Every structure is written in structure tokens, then in C-alpha cells.
Length: 276
Image 1 (tube, helix red, strand yellow):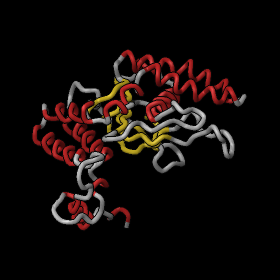
Image 2 (cartoon, one colour):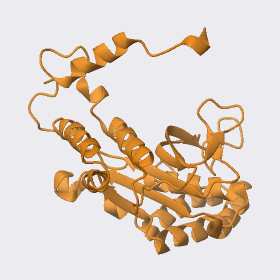
Image 3 (spheres, one colour):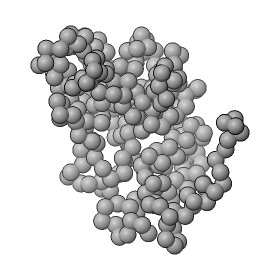
């Protein structure tokens, strides 16, 4: 039966009730949000082969959503107070394959030439860090997981054609002004210090893993951050810029994305009537 399963047309009919006109059957923000905006943008970049952009796809690469990337700070014992589970990446570009014994866990394919992780934002900031490392926010967690994934391949950074971590958000004047932490959170030194603080918690607790993490930091993390910084691939991108890049290839697709994006923006805090 599973091989014959398909998405029922009735589901599409229900989803269309969120388009406006009448009382919606569910909150429209279930669809008009940064998660679906990112999937639409990545799908356009891949299918249209948009060139010369940080999110351009290398040959053989595909996009994945909500991929679970293994952390270098994985639990090493039962009820590990310092350990953490995999990080859910909003978007990943590259050649990936399933990680053993997981449903959504992914790892880099041995032959991948690209590994780009994207965090999508519409109105919110990057989430805060952990109790033991307050600065260890979403950007730092994603970068740490990326460095770990690359380390596990056993390959040199120069063997990759495209590596990057990007936050995609509205242009600056549509964000939360002076309270926005997006640009500052992707500065190389800010990310490095946040992960250093995370490792320091193991050192303070005199955990045996501290030596291993220190070696990982020196051997993999710092060179990885240096590479991203040198390639300018640790940065904030804007939805507007992505739509403009798509428009240069297909104006119709860009126009559709622009309308979807406008609908997402209509649910900004303070905008009248979130259920309209």
C-alpha cells in the first residue's frame, strides 16, 4: 500500500483556504512562514540552476529541509548534563545520505563537493544559547555541527567547491531594528568564542571529553571558520536578494515567490489581524 500512497487532493483544498477570503480553517502562518519560504527558494535555486549566488547549487547537489546534523557535543553518558542532541538545520544543500539508525539524521556523502547550511528567519532573532553556554546560539550550533560533519568525512576543506553557513532574513529595515542579533551572530570571532565557551564547560567540569574537544577545536573548527570567513560564506542574506537572483532567470517564478513573501510579511508583529 505504501508504494501506491499519494497526497490526497483534499489536502490541497484545505491548504488553499489559507490564501484569504473568508474565515481560514487553520492559522495561515502554518504555511506563510520562513520554513516554507526557504523550501520554495531552495527549490527554485535548484530547479532553475540560478548562477553566481551563495545559494547556487553545485552539480549533483540537492536541498533538504529539517535535516538533523550530529553535534560534536553529543551525550557521552546517560542523563548527560552537557550533552546535546542533533541540530535541526532549516535547509541544507549538498549530497547527503541517511545516518544509520535515525529517521531524519543525515551525513555528508563521501563524494559531495558542497555543504551549505541555511537558517531561515522572518521576524525573530537567532535563539539563545544553553544554560552552560549562553552565547551558544543557533548560528554557533549550526557551525559546530557543520565542522563536525566535515571532520567525519576525513577530507580537506580544499576538496569542497562550496561551503557556507547563511542566515536568510528580510532586509534590514524590515527586521526588528536595534534588537536584531542576526548580523552580529554570524561574525567569525563571535561564533568561535561561543563554541569555545561550550568547550570550556567541559573543561570546568573536568570531563574526560575536554581533551578530545580541544583537539577538535584546533584541528577542525578553527580552520573551518577561517575558510568560511575567507570565502565570505558566513553571512546574512536577504529574501529580497534571493528573489532578485531568481528573477534574473525566471521572472514568473520570482513573481510568485514575491507574492508568497509579501503574504508572510503581512503577519509581522503589529500587523492587523493575523487570521485575515
